[in-house]
Length: 142
Image: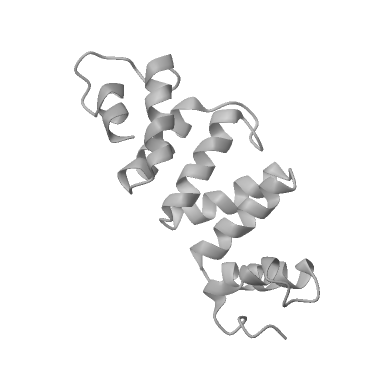
């Protein structure tokens, strides 16, 4: 038994540190923690599925973690929406919304991606004086 399992925040360490007999058992602990509402575990499951190119499952877990308020999950969910991975169609407006939430929470790469979306006019309405920050502001932030 892994000595870190007692702390569900560290369950993901079991996937990397070699103290678990296999990754399948580590995933089981993450699923258990996610089922108890632990947003970080949900995000790690999303990352695991994304790494395995199981994008539909990645969307499921990133959505749950993002809706629970985890900025890293907001950013990762935005990436999937921006690329159209695991979703039926590209959803630039939704991607921009999740990038904005992540950027507001301090994720610099989300601010950079939002800047790119403003610059390319993807999912955003380009305006000289928008009601929300323009790409110029997001460029300065990122």
